[in-house]
Amino acid sequence: MFNFNFNNSFHNLSDDFYELCNPEKSIDPKLVIFNSDLANELNIDTALQYNPEYLTGNAILPGSKPAAHAYAGHQFGHFTMLGDGRAHVLGEHVTEHNERYDIQLKGSGRTIFSRSGDGRAAIGPMLREYIISEAMYHLGIPTTRSLAVSLTGDNVYRETSLPGAMLVRIAQSNLRVGTFEYAVRTEDKDNIKQLADYAIERHYPEIQDDQNRYLSLLNKVIEKQSKLIAQWQSVGFIHGVMNTDNMTISGETIDYGPCAFMDTYNPTTVFSSIDQYGRYAYNNQPSIALWNLTRFAETLIPLIDDDESTAIQYAETALNTYRDQYIQHYMHIFGQKIGIDHITQDDFQIVIDFLALLEKYEADYTGSFRKLATQQFTQLDIYNNEDVQEWYQRWLAFIQSTSNEQEAYTLMQSVNPAVIPRNHLVEEAVSDATMANDYTKLHQLIDAIHNPFSDNHDTQYLNPAPPNERIYQTYCGT
Image 1: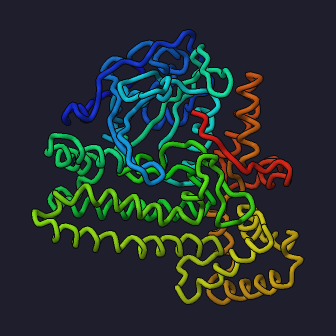
Image 2: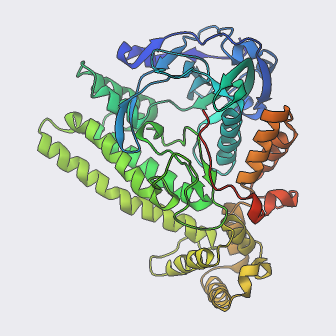
Image 3: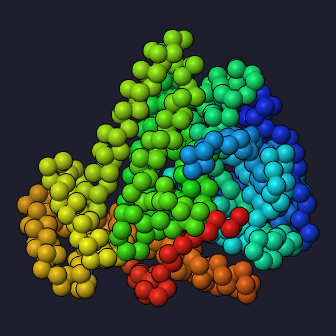
């Protein structure tokens, strides 16, 4: 039905990892937004959008075996046993190209992992995830995606009564660092081997025959995450809750809660209301990723080598490569952002100096790079400063001497977005939908973020927020 091709390989693992359970029924499911492009990519019949009962779990798709997954996590540094408290994985859809994706309902009701939660979700956070995940995808950053958001007809109670909603999330898998942390703490000591073997088979089959495939698994995840975090930094994305249960083994960005994009460049930027001490601030994201990867490495120690001290040595050697890999990705991406495809460490000072000027003058991060790429940088207010003019002339002479100038501008325009989901625009769109049932701004914003490297948009999507409209704090709101 609807071309779904379900397979449930995760259920071949120990049932310690999941609980089979159906989503709770919704009173009156109504589709809000459907991602036809994604449906086509997955070879899913777009007629699904006219059947919201399947998008909310009121009706179960043939072949689907809904389940809530178990996992754990270090949340703000503190370990907790967790699990899908308001989500159900319907199954794994296998495409005609043999690509496997988890189809998950989010906000689908209570499970044995719900603890004191109601298992539901409000419309606002579900729309926020749809917007931001689509933006990340079109920016070329690995991410889970959103197939649909539907109203449930129920109300959920947070600080006030809000319309209930459900999101359909698409992910390469829901295997997290926290899944491995959970596995090593179960009574069955074979669980961690089962899980690691499954992760390798599903995500990294090319390492199955490696002499030490569990060490290779660690190296693969380090490689994926080092690049992902560099990509986050390049667009000013701040995740907000980089707990270990929010880091995937596949290298996809997952769990869009109080996330946001920087307006003015400030490396200490924090948006999340729950991050009171800035643990997950913009400039801390690279080191937190390493912290999370270290927790992942700890779970693999029993598999890497029978001798614990030898295994630890191997793991530490692998983790020590993270910094160099991250710096390499960071330098490459930021070199491209100023028009240099293969920048050297000696020449990277020009990037550092530019970022220092953006911080000094509280310049718009996205807009400054885009104006540089489109030869309009001298029109910005920041250019009125003598040290900025000196940098610009130095940079201009540099790209003229090291590369074809027009090729440099073309490169810059391909990596510096004109459009990001500006925080004030996201809030406006979500607020209109939540409070007035008006989705006009939502659809307009989504149309804009589908073409982030084009300047052919209304100026509201290209310009920074006025100072009085800048969003300084975000809320998870789940």
